[in-house]
Image 1 (tube, rainbow, N blue to C red):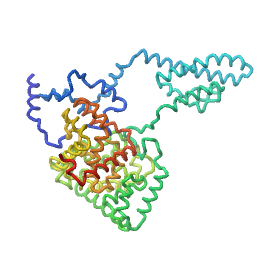
Image 2: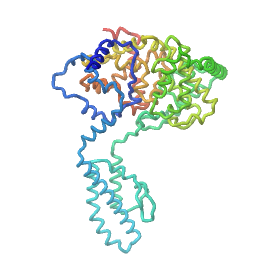
Image 3: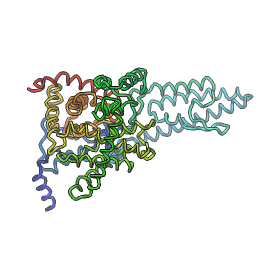
Image 4: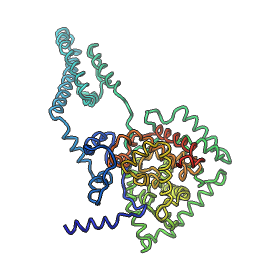
Length: 548
């Protein structure tokens, strides 16, 4: 009991936290569960039944009470097993077994029927007797398949399994099977038609894919994209690149083939004059590795130990679902980049979240040297000189980005606090219903939007979407420092329906910390950016519009 009392006193004494002192709460990029699979389960399992009229919830008087209400909104523990256990309890075992038996039975009949068909083809003399028997069996089989299709789609997995033929050859799909009778062909066509009629959405693996891919399944290089690539190459081919024209082209997305050089130009890392670029690259790369020789050995000094230790802890947490970033050589590169930046910027030093900002640059500059996908690419296969170039380029471009938003990371992070306040005012004007709904359940914007500003939405979006988003940020004047505010406002209002469906603090925090964007692609990001541009056009030059 004495320990419990001390715990209460501790939390009562320390209720005021310094702004910026945040925990790791992973969102769409590092989700504790898949919202598409567990959304209904979470709503059914986590919401307490409401017996009173909706209104302001009673405030927690102790930390223990507050923690018991919001524990699953903040913890990132391994609760997948608990979710699966809850799901298993809700299943009717009899229905499951009956369905499984029916699937196996129908699959066995299908194999038997195909074997009979092969026998009939090899023994034409017995054809008449077998046809009569098969016609009697095929009709109930077809009905069984229709029933089974209505109850479950599990049998679709069997349609692609291998089954043996009389010549000991395995057939892996219906398309490789021998042509049967018209009756049997009709059954196969019915099954195929049922499969094709199901809603089809190509699955983009949660956050692992970084290729330019639209969720509608359209190819990455359409005729329009090929035309845009030609325009980029024409602009970049001149002796002096027209940066204004390059920004206009880049706003709608940059083709992968020219993204590295375009990012370097738009960030100010490379000059517009083509003749000076090579000498600039050599000078800046040598300068960076001069910093490594000068500063990196001091990482174990007493006054730098805390900085290096925090960087060393955060690096493995950077995109943990993507194998590329778990390679030792990549993590060493990130450690050097972040430590050198922190040493050269003592006003802010290293702050948690800056580690995420290296990853888009690193991925884009790796693409400059490879053709294949980068998710599982082994960087040790690259030449050492190439890796050094990628490291130096990533450092300088990240430095250019942070120069424009460094007040986000100085003491107490005043830049983020101003932007979160501006976001609250903006949302109150563009969607008062959402704003009042969050006020009703005492959700503070700082509780969820702090991470949006600190990490530039990188924890809310897959990395492929972040790269597309940054195409526009690089093209937009003050994209990272100013336009990002309107993107956050459009992003919040994008989930209006889901927000209004949540009727308590806990549900709102779970939603806002784990927004289901893991299947997003270029199309969704383009719509988000278009809405953000509309908001900027309406409010940016008239700040009084969003003041009451």
